[in-house]
Amino acid sequence: MRKLILASNSPRRVELLGLFDMPFIVQPADVDETEWPDEDPLHFVQRLARQKAMTIAGAGQGMVIAADTIVVDGDALLGKPVDPADARRMLLQLRGRTHQVYTGIALYDTGAGRSHESVCRTDVPMRQYSDAEIDAYIATGDPLDKAGAYAIQNDAFHPVEGLQGCFASVMGLPLCHLMLGLRERCQDVPDDIPERCQRFLNFACPVFRSILGLV
Image 1 (tube, rainbow, N blue to C red):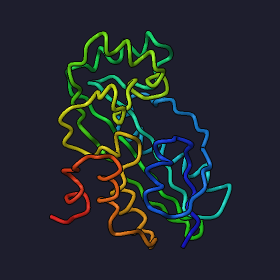
Image 2 (cartoon, rainbow, N blue to C red; image 1 turned 45 degrees about the horizontal axis):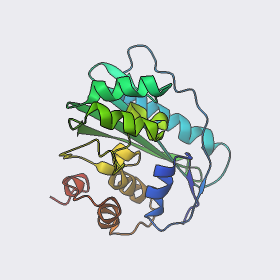
Image 3 (spheres, rainbow, N blue to C red; image 1 turned 90 degrees about the horizontal axis):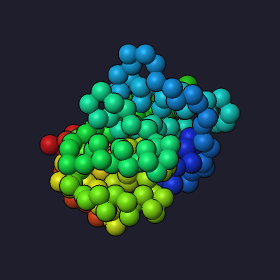
Image 4 (cartoon, one colour; image 1 turned 180 degrees about the vertical axis):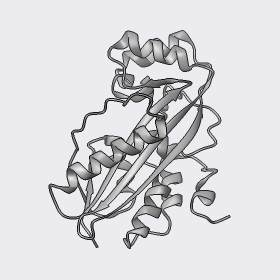
């Protein structure tokens, strides 16, 4: 088994990768995350995930796992808010509407010199939360380090209703995509990752069978 290296210090990604029960180390990658002119969201997250993986691949031996997540509302890419006022602006913009979350993953096997890349796109329907709920949520500080100014897993705010896509991808690491990538690179992976993911997130996933080719 190759040593797994997670090129991120995101607590959400650390938690999700931990569901594999496979030892890994955390080695964050520092890359320029500036969007290129006329770059579409899919290529943007794919490029950043690749850059993160290759940055870490040059510093150690093992299987590097990198990811990048962006929130897209129409033509607007929503990153992390710069302050509480910016968080409020984003939450008002997203309220009661459906936007998209793109998460790109890149795996790089430093021993074999081979990589695997994929992108998960998820439609995210936001509920009609109130202005008071926005203010209370911002006061917790939780939105300030989240793209789009929300965490889908925040039970108190509960920003999303009726999700029909990959919950883990919106959190930052689509586990079925990662499972397929690791197996493609001949890495042993537990068979019950979808079940572990659903139990951990308390979410009945409607898409894992199609992602894994089980239907």
